[in-house]
Image 1 (tube, rainbow, N blue to C red):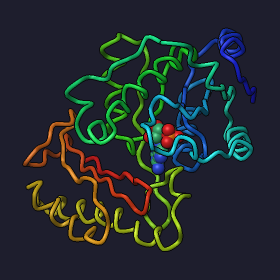
Image 2: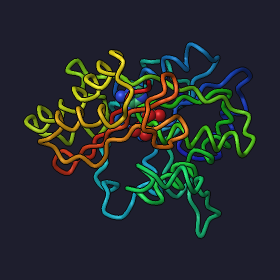
Image 3: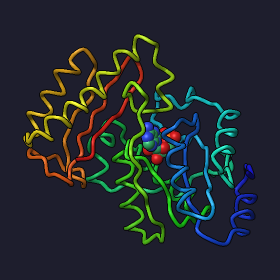
Length: 273
Ligand code: AMP
């Protein structure tokens, strides 16, 4: 595995490759969710390129940018073990300059849900993803369904800007107790983690009642709310794959989204129907 820190080094290393490149961008503190994306990228491409960069432009003032978990030594070992060929770990100054051209996420679809709660977040996500795509020039890029709206925004960007990159959506990986893996889970105390299990339980309940034929969004949302009643729910919504809220669930075209705060930690989960 080659570790590169600067843009010029990365360009030099990418120029040496000939064959399909699978790319997995991350913010580090790697867990089995990240590794599942890497595994798949490794299988489907000749080369696996990954990046670790905690991107300042996607954090809002007051969010956890300053304290975002940093596990670089473990991350390097995990990346090497899984077969990453090139690991890009830039500094902020390598990536951003003064008074830059910026990217705007689509107005309607980025200003609901996560975009409404975190105004400007997706502009920052698209800005860094586009920069990384331009540097890595991947054949395929792998993103988790866990961040469903992010995945959708990136797919729209690729389509709208005519980027020649295939976006691969990867399933959510959960811990044994059901909690979706997230770098932010390490903020949870053991009692908070216990409480947080209501989140996957609400998702599993939604799945069960939808599989039993219940298609009314309100009924599904109400049953999730009752399971999450002791937690600070930011939102529970059912949307189609274009992120329009829907009253009736459409099989193969819907997503159940839940965001809950446990203490200061925001946890996301969802279910693609
Ligand atoms: P992050 O480091 O949080 O920016 O995540 C990097 C990538 O890993 C994103 O595409 C995420 O959607 C994906 N990811 C994060 N958690 C999971 C998970 N539990 N299962 C699958 N993919 C995940």
